[in-house]
Image (cartoon, rainbow, N blue to C red; front, side):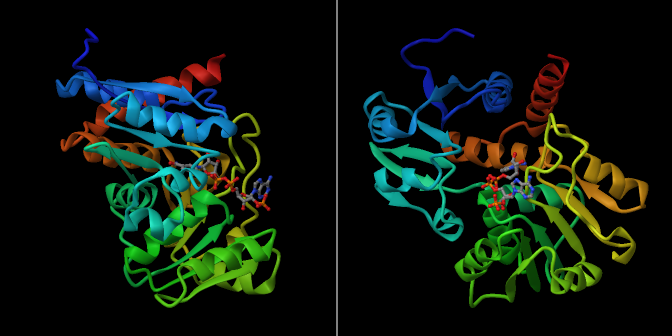
Length: 288
Ligand code: NAP
């Protein structure tokens, strides 16, 4: 592609960016869209975040994605924070409109879209989430927004699970518990959806997985893993072996990216092209 002064710039603020696959995914989608955009990795140490955000505005970026560790702190430097980000308590996408920086969060809706793509709806059902970090917060916000009937969040540190439950308090029953408690096991035995929102199973420690009492799960339970590297984790493989429907984390990564693409450009992204670029990138990381 030819980069000119007219090329619209977007990118990714994070630290460290390491093997981020967002540039490959977005640039592949821009290439087939005919839109004159480029997506740049913008490695930003925490002590320089405010200058980097000012640079986004000064350099005329159309927007950026935001990742670890800036998703919460970046909110201090924005002109406006959309409801989607207020609900999750974090920003993963900034749109620049007439020099104003507006923060959004596409992780929650991206997660729900990835379930829909797999033919799964959550309204009126119950879910159990392993983990109480940023990804768990987005997933719980997404599930509540999609009219789930109840959510149980299990964490090794119950106070963190309680913190997420309080964030969405008053809408549907959301409970935080310690994941070694009998309450958590009881919730697992009755749930419709089990979500791994921890890094357990992520490359290179691919043999680990959340501690699920498989024999207690109902056969119809859907197993969802947010980990996307590898695309088929040992948690998903075990779920498949036991006859459960499984949904991998690649879908959420693609859908949250496609929603950001749409916020910046006003156009739909080609998610098939994004998936191909993501899977090719993951394969290259694992082969190294
Ligand atoms: P995070 O904020 O660091 O939270 C991680 C959570 O997992 C915390 O509750 C943490 O517990 C727990 N945890 C971490 N290591 C653990 C271990 N060895 N054993 C048990 N629990 C452990 O991370 P995050 O941003 O939520 O990300 C979690 C995972 O989701 C990562 O693998 C990430 O790649 C994936 N993710 C995927 C997508 C997607 O689009 N598919 C999006 C976001 C994240 P403590 O608080 O007690 O340490």
